[in-house]
Length: 179
Image (cartoon, rainbow, N blue to C red; front, side, top):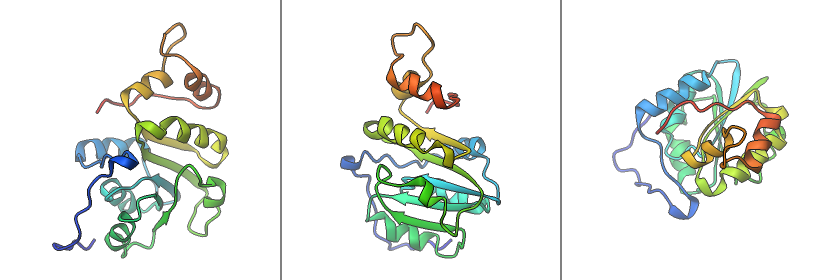
């Protein structure tokens, strides 16, 4: 990986709900939960500056990163230019047809998804992922505590609602750790 001392510093954009993941302890927990393998494709929504992406590409898995922030695209392309198993796409994850993405020549048979989702689009992204669930063997999502509480709410809990029922109907959910 090439690091440039004079590269343009990128800041999280509040308008996109960005919150860059940099803590190596949490990154390792996410990588461990995802357990990427060389015969898999990992779709990463919102790679940001690539802190998690670095560990994913080094696993040998094929990585397809979806990034909306056009200022981050060149940074990611530069950072991972020596990795043949990395591709970045400038796109809104809410508009992506994941079944088409899984057909890319870079895609492998088993497809997993990982994302650190902003609160304001968590529900919409979850709905989109569930609509296209046949594409994925698994997703590992970093979500705001309130969203996780709604998703994992037990019967009779006041947090239980539409999102709880939707996720229960099509997925198995598990809270892995607090941040």
